[in-house]
Picture 1 (cartoon, helix red, strand yellow):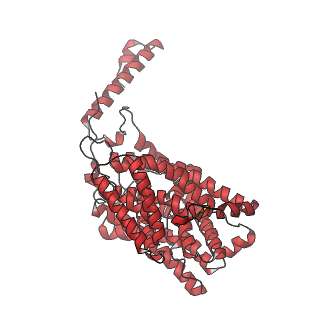
Picture 2 (tube, one colour):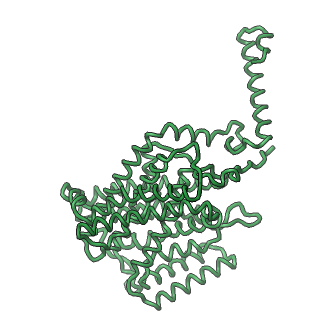
Picture 3 (tube, rainbow, N blue to C red):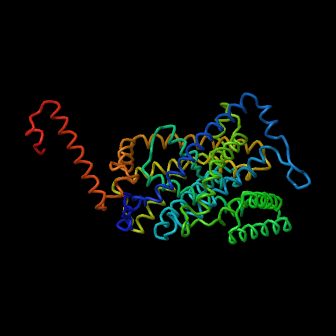
Length: 470
């Protein structure tokens, strides 16, 4: 007989920060982060490969990166590196758009009270790195153009770090990290759209907007078939690219249009279904290829030394390492204090600081913004990329140390979350208020007791002693 649905105790935790997730949210989170973790490991491998390739066979690396391909008549005669940044990352931002839409209508951001804390934390986690960068460059007479570079968080790279160091975070901390990244992606998209839009081609922009309207109408009418949407998406992307607006905006716009709520008879919403199909392409192909053609910078002793002596690069490093950690932790603490949200008693504020430090891994979007901010200066672009790599590495090491200090506590919490003694597919922690669960557990214990009494008899114990209750 199927077990009854578990009770959701979140109504008891309205003011609890980092409290237990609902079971559907926990399952979605586990599925999403599993793909992101694999993608993060591939991203890490691609970054290392890019560094090795660029520092051993720099001529071939530059030749491949600068090789142009595509129809010039359509304005798409782009270099391989350009295709990776503007084309492949549009897939990444498409998935980000779906994630954001789902969080807003069905996830942690649907409740304004619950959303307030992670949104404030994410905003502070973007404002503080920008402020650190501005201060460093104001004091050092550096360029202010790169203020947005250290504001981004790379969730895939952060999860890859967790996989490498062998640390499994409790679901509440993982959800907090993912929510931070989703909000972070939203504001990164806005930054790209507002501050890195070149001269507009209104004809192409109008065509792109018309394509987006058609995309939305087809979705509303329930039209199905990849052979309809994929060609239309390519046309919208090409028009958006030629309009002067960064092409990744096309991806996130289409992602936001998908329906992410379920209807009668649906197990998963269309948005979740498409995200499930596209996320492996984004995490396993698009983002690693972007890293391969963007992370190839010189790592000589002189180049590394320059990262810590030039105001632009030092601002990026300090923004990622110091700004992110202080901004997210400070924003979280202030939001919790003013909303009177109580921290989950199973966790402590040092856990929040460790996750905030982990969010200092910028990488993918930071590299993209670095390319956009210093597009006219190849040398400075490479220096900024080196700073992003160095800052992300330092943040990863710092977070790893902090997380390892609490690894035994995390292992205990994860084991409790995953325990399923009645083997019904629902973690026991979600069934504590379910009478049927306790009746099943009683039957299980009675069977075990009978089995042990039988073993005791076979071992030679007297029957009356074997039957004696413990």
